[in-house]
Every structure is written in structure tokens, then in C-alpha cells.
Length: 64
Image (cartoon, rainbow, N blue to C red; front, side, top):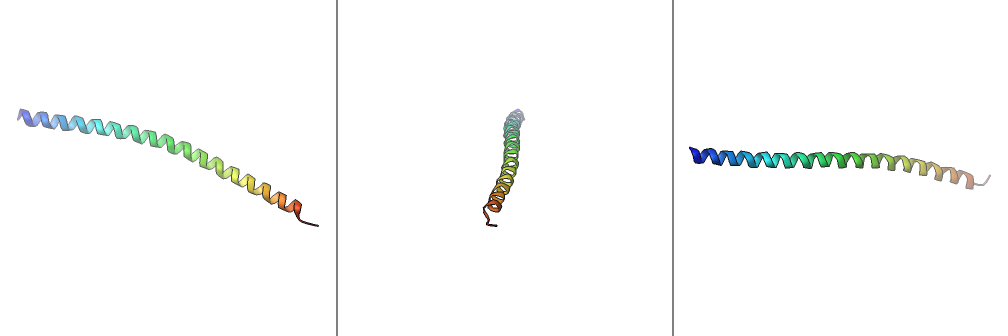
């Protein structure tokens, strides 16, 4: 019984350690995802501004 108990205890400790590592990885991914989402939003806004600038320039270049 004692051997089984120690085996189970060791397995539990390993699982606990793995779970903690996965939680840290998950937290890291959440932070990275947040940064990427902000960057994506900024990029979309920049693209809209550039598109408008190009459109405005094309209007100016058209002959009357």
C-alpha cells in the first residue's frame, strides 16, 4: 500500500507541475494574442487611412 501511495503521490505531483506549466504557457499566449490583436487593429486603421489618401490623390490627378 505504501508503494502505491508514493507512486500516486508522485504522479499527482507531476500532473500538478505540468498543469502549472500549461497555465503559464496559456497566460503567455493570452498576452501575446492581446498584443497581436492591438497591432492588427492599428494596421487595419492605417490601411484605411492610406486607402483614403490614395483615393484623394487619384481624384486630384484626374483631368477636369
